[in-house]
Length: 494
Image 1 (cartoon, rainbow, N blue to C red):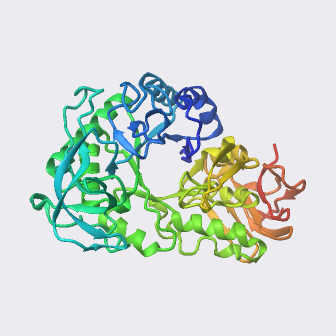
Image 2 (spheres, rainbow, N blue to C red; image 1 turned 90 degrees about the vertical axis):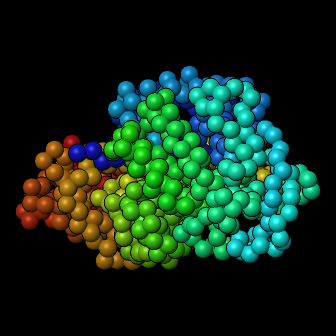
Image 3 (cartoon, rainbow, N blue to C red; image 1 turned 60 degrees about the horizontal axis):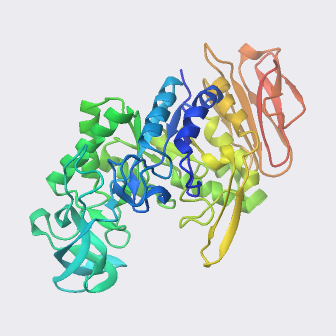
């Protein structure tokens, strides 16, 4: 049995030096030894700003750093050849490769077109505040640098449902393209935020157009032929009709890999019922990131000892659908200076990681700065420049290793105190188990049962956060301890 652990191998403010693919090639064996089992890479296609693009402003998904487009050949992360070499190294190390698929929108079109649109109330996308009128907008993508290699498909305004900028008249707004051929208004989505949140940004892809769906299927198969990916991280799924993903994922699993993993980004921290409704709409075809659990981590880290630690899993995805929950302590959207900024305070991060790495439920995902650290400067929400330093999470590598070695077998929870919680993992035929104790206040102790197979053994803290030794009695119980505001992972001595 393998305890899967994903690494998000990037963050928003990585330097635009083209080195990430080379770094991943070098790091893959070390990450595998540590206990990482899957690498989530950033969007690999060319974005609107070429070598500076994070990748979520998609221009050409077929340009993996091969063509002179948008001011550069390479992407922010490197060249096509370097990406393929990194993918090969990841697989040689026994790791899975998860690619980031950004399918909601495109930007940086090559040519303008004239089209009929209606203005939309940005706060209620179902309300049209004008009749149909004509504008000129950038909606035609011919990819002159690629010259039809890999795909001859030309995107035009029939492939989009909306835009946010008109060049004639020169103005910004949200415009729904009048295109009766594929249906009136926006596509149906699960979320009713802003009335209908189909439109997010740039040129919004029209999934009711069958030619568009077929092109995206071709791209998914082509990318697999190129990188042999094992899974997909799906961007902005709340803005895309779930019917498209049902069709697309079914095709990929039938023609590529029946075990293809998929996790969607549906960031709705305070609305668990909505996420569960999305599972119904997609028939369990994809997992989702546990945004509600991240919200609990954020709040717990700011409230300190006043947070009731034994309620940390209440109203979370991992408590309702552990089989479809990918758990996180941070990501590129929640890191400081980003739009969804909600960082977990440093002191609490080891606790949060213990809660996702050492339990039976959920599929944990590690955030790059928590493993490697990060330093960057950018404008904040106040318009001023801010310098940010994100330190490595203390002993995170040891907790990942503890998951790999000890987080197996039956789990017994001891969530019977507001500030001191714990659980035991009994182990299995191949792995020893562990006992985990956490405090967000004073030092604490708790008698917990680890199992009669450990009777007479001595346990020590794998993380060395507590100096004590715990003796297991004849019934398999131990009096485990934890330091103030800390986490201890107790394992058999030696």
